[in-house]
Length: 336
Ligand code: 5GP
Ligand code: MN
Image (cartoon, rainbow, N blue to C red):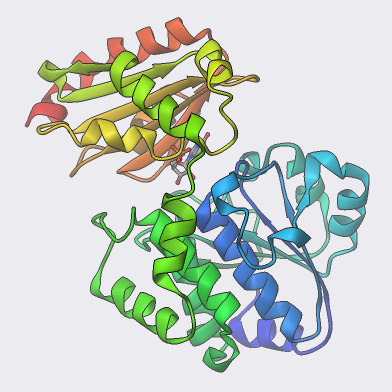
């Protein structure tokens, strides 16, 4: 196992480094990856960010995103880079199935694997971890890693601050969720002081809808929302035809599930979407209700207590039926 000292020695010489993050990267995944990219690049390392899939349009402004390699579109070159890497940073995930088609290459690579993450139950593929499941975002842990483990606060440029702020902002639902502690606000304040333009980042992420995306939101609220008051649960189910009709791209369904929690009294919200390869579930809850347990036990997934995801290879109506059939089992925890 590596210690902070051996890690500092390791990073004292120019290294070949690969940074990766989970499938369909969100703001925290990309923010953390690009922050680490800028930080390592400035110390003279050769750095490549390789992600398992494309990422949402609302993140396609982040400093450094033009250097991101999408694995599925550049498989051979990516495999060579992964195999040759001295160090592989694994950010915002802790189990190799989360990087889909990249899993085998990363598993068999000889490079030192550094995991920075805030999800429960790490698989154990890493050689060094900076892991805290109570952290609001991986970007918060990247900040802590750079500042307190590596002692490199002065290395935080406006680009790095922007990336980290984006990660923390998106994973806390704009500083709304229970994970938003005083120290999260102190870090955000420091990042603004270091050059993150908070108002501009909010504009980029939240006011960058296409017309189609906003109309899709209206359509879903009107036609695809089912409220089950007896279980304090609300559910969106979205078919492939719905996605096609509004020309929905990666990331366009992001945030949709939260609207269901805006209904007074709701404890649990689900978004069930028929994607091309499989049906994807997103669960969100308020308070103690454990979304991650439901996803882990029934939908091949996981995540956090209040935000988790899973998937299924069954047809959409069957997955919706399965979800609804589970509600009586959880009723006491939903209505307490
Ligand atoms: P989302 O609903 O936004 O896709 O994901 C919410 C949270 O659940 C994220 O923290 C994400 O890492 C986790 N998550 C989403 N899908 C999966 C999955 O298929 N497996 C696991 N283990 N976690 C997931
Ligand atoms: Mn995260």
